[in-house]
Image 1 (tube, rainbow, N blue to C red):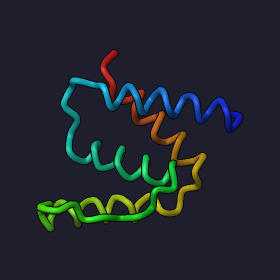
Image 2: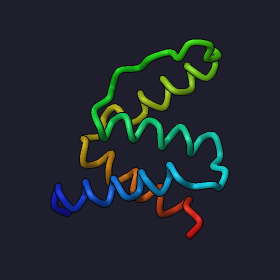
Image 3: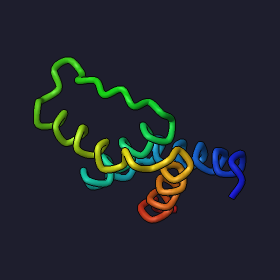
Amino acid sequence: MKKKVLHTKFEEAFKRVSEATQDFPPDVLLQFYALYKQATQENSFSNSEGEHELVSAFKLNALLQVKHLSIQEAKKTYIEIAEKYLIN
């Protein structure tokens, strides 16, 4: 898949996930979070003020699990997970 097409599909998947009213399991939310960060190269991990340490640990773990993916691989995986979990 060409980079431009992949990016467009990724942006569409991100928008659909962001606007979804359905509840996603916590592990899927963490996958979306980590894949988005990897796909957009926002690799800076920040601990939100007031965020529980356990939540931060789960986020960091999710980021470490996708660290090996290229930007294109992260976008493709994000799209696949979105298609799997989104209710049409």
